[in-house]
Length: 333
Image 1 (cartoon, rainbow, N blue to C red):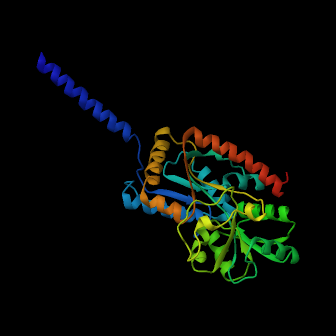
Image 2: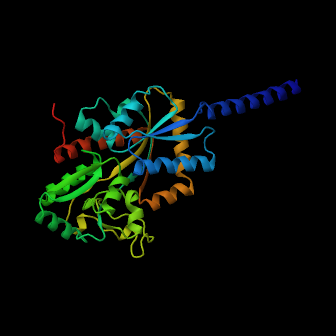
């Protein structure tokens, strides 16, 4: 009788262990996973996707490889609609920004973030007013006054049309009364290159999109469009770190804008598939490489999943509706 009890106990332990293992690995990718970047190579979204691709590979966080695909057509709409059309596909992730709301709002694109499955917000990104270090604008007052004096001649570049960069540019115009020529590019990398070549007078790139040129002395960071200075104090250039860049409000230009960095799956996936990627993102953000990436690119550290993420997306969407309206970009029906 005692042997039977021992055997039964051992069998129960074995079953429990097996069941726990089955639950822990309820689902995992069976083929390569695509990360869709709805913008061109070199921009902040592309850089983030490739950084995460490298972290996954280095720490062997997945048994399958990760492939980064740039789908930059129609100001990001191609990547959004590609993910929407991949209903039920658990081998695809979208790295997204505020374009989740802005692109549909300004174009009547038949897309909503609710068509997709939220995974995790991994950070928020800042925007900086950049000028060419060899150009005439060395400060915010010089830029504003010079733009007013040369109304309609100062060129500001940015990623795509009627998206974050042009929204910020429009808000600056409304606050200052200046008039700019907005020049859209496929991504922040191209906008940075054009500023280095003095083909434009300024851009409002994310820190990661212009950090190389800033470090090299080609670009000057005039101010950050944020409620407070960036936290990182280590020197990036010989003289400055991100924390040394004043907020635009400090210098009399009261325009603020921050952008989420979020990963989404197609709609129609299972809770087990969603959980796999939530767990994956939690492992990624715990690595030292991710913490280094945040500081190097001056990203605001903020991680959200589940209901907290869904609530944030709904609130952020409503805020963007007001911003789009103020910028004058609401699509005509």
